[in-house]
Image (cartoon, rainbow, N blue to C red; front, side, top):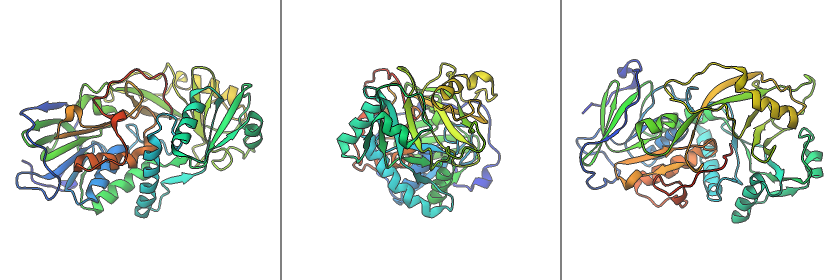
Length: 424
């Protein structure tokens, strides 16, 4: 067993491929969270402090549960799935009606977390979903709104163009649904604030420390890192694109996914600010849609496609971070058609990894009901808006509490059918 150390004592980050879960002995009985007993470094280790892990560590620590957080890079880094300056926040979530509850819990927790940082975390701007009345963008949004009594507005094509003339070449029969609770989240600021809040509440945080394996043993788990091992009662694995390498069998596929930003075609055009051009998802043809929002900072107008055949499956330890024309060919074509007020050539491209599950829903909970292991991942391109609410869910699962929403739709062992498309 490794005695507790400060992050400084761990030294530089190790290299090499991430290991996998190993089950050395039977699970035994689940252990209640609380003051760590002799023989344990903590009750819980959270492996990976990105979107889900940073907030899980925070929500565990505020419960008084002894927790260790381990991150292979520095919190708020840009090498995984949780960077990008902004992420869409929506409450009328077309992916699943239960996500409305998660989004609202996330909003409340981010408002609480805001006290820990001077940087903005969540900005509510409102947002519009656009498409034919029978498109998933519209039907999914309305289904979520109706299930929860959300105060959305329904707009005709003419009303939409009058409100946001930046949207051009809308197909006949297109409609809009306005979600007044939508906006943007600032992911790097949210992660750094969550890690700081976790540390302030008593969590031990180990940045620049790579986990090589997790061994499930009688009554707990041993988390092996490049600098030594921790023995804990339970382990939460939230390693994003690396989750499938550490916990195989979850049906996850990490994809190399460029993010793109654009400038107005006319430098004097000031209509593409975040206030004037808020969050949107827009069906552009029968098989695809684009998502984005106006310029929230000097990076420009953020636009991306729902899917692109050039977004390829990758090994997260060997992802190609070089940029080529094919990385923006499709989104440039879609921007040119749908948003002609923008220059279709991106002014900035950065690399992200989106980990898709088999049905487009997250993977949250205990695989095979193992009392020693909890996983969080499979973001499928729409998780960051729910990161703090997901952290709360994972903390509730670890602590044996009733969850604030039914989690059957994200259970790791659920039966799944392939998803046709995902949204951001």
